[in-house]
Amino acid sequence: MSVAASSPIITDLPAYCRDVAQRAKAASAQLATISGDVKIAWLKRSAALLRSSQERLTAANQQDLAAAPDYGLTPAQVDRLRLTAERVEGIAAGLEAVALLRDPIGRVIDSTVRPNGLVINKVRVPLGVVFFIYESRPNVTADAAAICVKAGNAVILRGGKEAIHSSTAIVELLHEAAAECGLPADAVQLVATTDRAAVGQFLTMPESIDVAIPRGGEGLIRRVCAEAQMPVIKHFDGNCHVYVDASADLQSACDILVNSKCQRMGVCNAAESLLVHADVAAEFLPAAAAALAQHEIEIRGDERVCELVDSAIPATEEDYGAEFLGPVISACVVPSVDAAIEHVNRYGSHHTDAIVTNDLAAAEQFAAAVDSAAVMVNASTRFNDGGEFGLGAEIGISTDKFHARGPCGIEELTSYKYVVHGNGQVRK
Image (cartoon, rainbow, N blue to C red):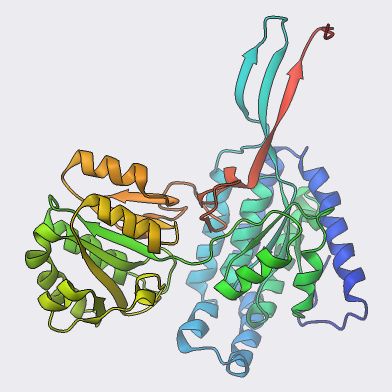
């Protein structure tokens, strides 16, 4: 399906959404039996077409940039929207990186032979159809399409209106590559309307869509969770902690804290809360405050923090549970690793939490007891990322416990089935 370069007039929205979902379901059935070589060929050809279509992509992107003021985008948001030659090359290289990943489909996860001779194989299979709702960054369009199809899934892409022209141009190139390589055209579909009601329509189609994945603000994600009639892979927010233990190397702790908080503040794996053991608070907190001050970070702390850091302001209960996504961090002095764990589990969002320590027992206790998707020992929270974990690509990070947790790469976009081989056995 070729998507128009602007939102078309759709007179029957439910019928349109139903048609898209049904065609995705049919494409997913074809993808389940398509060889890995076909998917690799599609990814490589898509990358080549992106590189050779710079002018076409730039023209589409200029339409989005011209409309950006009407949407009230900040300069940072406009910059994320912009497609430069370097960024197009990055998108193309990303597709090629996904092509190099091991194909999970058909892989035997486990195999046993029963006393009666039955061979029980646990085999990895696609989820089916993914409905992906995401923010307005053109590269995400290509990334999501690549990882979903590599995992054998059809994908329905619902990007933000701010990038509709750029996303359309990218998907048209992916379709051209699909036609050349023998991939079902409907394996990748971009929702052709920016009408928000379309999201609600798709979320009521569990017969065609197997999983919804929202990526964006908390309001969007909570809406999807409330309305979806299929499973949702998601996280709501990222209140991530750095706990500095009594035995920590304090210089290393300071470096980890500053990187966790300041390397990129507006992301879900940036640190929002600092916990410091009482035994090292007097030495560590003034030095940490000075380092954070170089990045203009405001510290909101408990009574002990405010005693040790002149610039700190008293924290509220809400501050300890907040995802600031900016130059603010909460801070608290704790008497023990047990107290740190209790604080993290009470106020955290089960996303990413770090301990800095030279005490192996403390590290093991923290890692076992903190109920988060990722626990970092002597490393920055910013490493909770599919690329940094060696997954090659990710479609998001999940703080759930079913079906996926942490960075969701290709394997998290699969399930499994049991394939049983016999030679005539019947049950008695």
